[in-house]
Amino acid sequence: MPQDANAIRSILSLAPVVPVIILDDVSKARPLAEALVAGGLPILEVTLRTPNALKVMEEMGKVEGAIVGSGTVRTPLHMQQSVDAGCRFMVSPGISPRILDAADDIGIPLLPGIGSPSEAMTAAERGYSFLKFFPAEALGGAPVLKAFASPLPDITFCPTGGITPINAKTYLDLPNVICVGGSWIMPADALSSGDFARVEALAREASALRG
Ligand code: 3PG
Image (cartoon, rainbow, N blue to C red; front, top):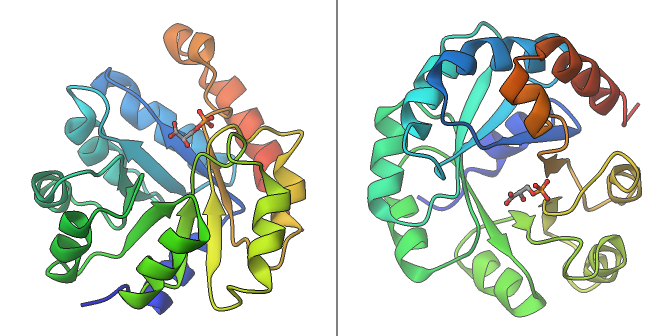
């Protein structure tokens, strides 16, 4: 079926920031997810960019309050593997016809990425009203999404790529932005040293960005 707008809206409206997670160390999955949830960020995107990403996803899914999705989904196989790992939503960097066709057959909502009005229109023709805008800063940032609002009033975005605590609010203040995604909440040194208190503090700051 086409994107279930109510399902994806209800997920993406739970927090202003979706942590975009790149993690291979399965032993850190639970404490990381616990820190993010405790800091007020329950929507977690685990990218399929590491060999153990699916195991990380499974572990994070066991954390109370966490809603774990799959990111960097680029193939139908990625989709099936993510469903098997218990993902609750999926994010792809683009809108290849293959990925949209496969999503039609899977009852898990997909948030596909676009970078231009033409791609947004293509996705809308396929039934998508919630899209990722990627890579947001490199493509011109919040002014581009502001410019999308008038000609594409039926489309709501989650921008990701280059978002920071400094520029996040500029995006979140736009009426066509439901949330932003980013990795800044999990600095590499905090992850490698297991400093989950720092992650929780960064998550708490991020969760207060809207409101
Ligand atoms: C990504 O694709 O890695 C995400 O969009 C996160 O980007 P960021 O690391 O710039 O926050």
